[in-house]
Image 1 (cartoon, protein in one colour):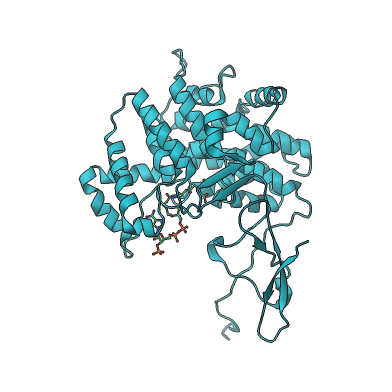
Image 2 (tube, rainbow, N blue to C red):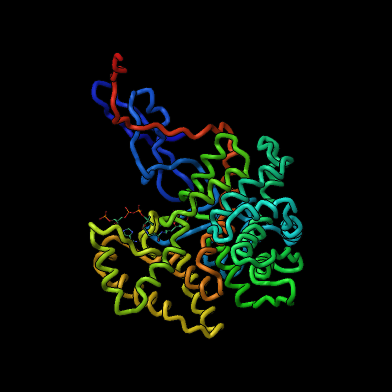
Length: 425
Ligand code: SDX
């Protein structure tokens, strides 16, 4: 219970007491669950001021630029942990012992293969299909192959489905790329790290030995860590809402992939590269910054701004450092990076962006790093989806583990026609 209350005065009604709850950090919340009996709904399109749930997975302080996963700061994890250990942390709530991590890693690395029949599923797509379109399809189709892990009321089913998704997403993703370039699929190599295995499935070919570049492997692992989870973002909220109806985990993750694809969300890294290519040269930046400020122009600087971060995105700080490491190691002199760095400088000095607190977000740099690693733009959001699967699954599991979990069913303010009668003929 709470000893703090908000008092709501409504016309013609007695004052309504609404409990105020405090989490371990962040904003207090006003519990409005009893509001329905007053005949009123709250109104919050886009959920700018709505806490949809209680969660212990990720904490964001947008004003201070803080991102914690189960209490650990993102840069601490990015520089000291690895993606599979972060997966264990997000899913289980604490860092694993050496023995626990060895068992977790073995299980993940031994579920990387797909049901061979799924390979035929890819053949139904056109070769020029966007890999995200393929991913929405094949991940949803996993429901048709893994009948033994669809009973969400059964904890062991939930666990095996989680492992299957964490393990198979890199395989599915690499296959969507191989299919689009007409190359043969590469089977997983369980002797490699999670990131190294993904790079081999992406760039290896059956007729040559593929040697994992440790710089690219480390950069890929950091990219996976930095995109793993981010509180109740649009795609995670999509997964929670789909899961609240009892839908199976594969269908829920497919819904999350669909939501992530939007350019305002996970599609921003691909859109950011398209924008940098459209700008082309440093001297054209002012023209695009002017368009971004023009209310009548729908153009936005992709990779800038964030619903929550009104300070720097701590992920962008790590990603910027990784970006320079990769470009220095590969000795890549990418003119688009020059455009990106100058755009960052101009935007951070421009009063419009300062006033609206529009800083570069994680997507601003991830696109440049991925491009430097030879990954095609259409695969950027696919890699975001591979990484975010652990976040989606962890929130899905947390929601189902919470007692009294209900189906999500928001209401509305109706502004349509009423009392119309069908005309007599
Ligand atoms: C991700 O939620 C998450 O956590 C997401 C994510 C995750 O890990 O899951 O962090 C991943 O999606 C990062 C965001 C990637 N998206 C982009 O980079 C696309 C470009 N950014 C914008 O579309 C926008 O900033 C959003 C969608 C990210 C946030 O939009 P909001 O919070 O709804 O803010 P808004 O659109 O109301 O903008 C506030 C003001 C507006 O001006 P006014 O109407 O107040 O005059 O800022 C302006 C906007 O016009 N603005 C921009 C801008 N972003 C906001 N103007 C120019 N360029 C931009 N990028």
